[in-house]
Length: 88
Image 1 (cartoon, helix red, strand yellow):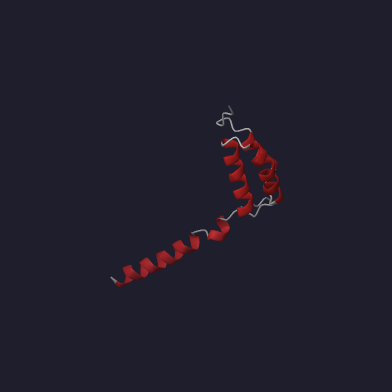
Image 2 (cartoon, rainbow, N blue to C red):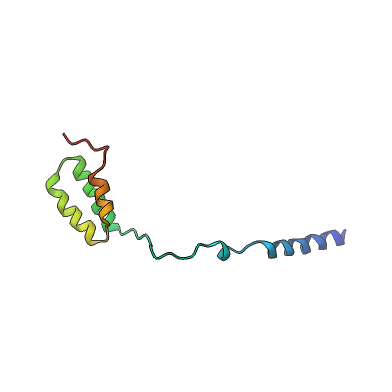
């Protein structure tokens, strides 16, 4: 009985050695790092609302603020070119 229990722990240690560590599975860091600036996200949200409510005179200010805080051109274009939005 003691040999079986000892064998279990020995087998468990060998199994732990075979398992890859988390650091081995981690991806290499990339140059592109997504940062979510709350001011940028808020400006984009306000832009979306202004477009929905057809308040086009406010849009340029929201676009300026969003770009100032790191919004990319494609993020703004996605909101402007949203096919679900139906201007009257």
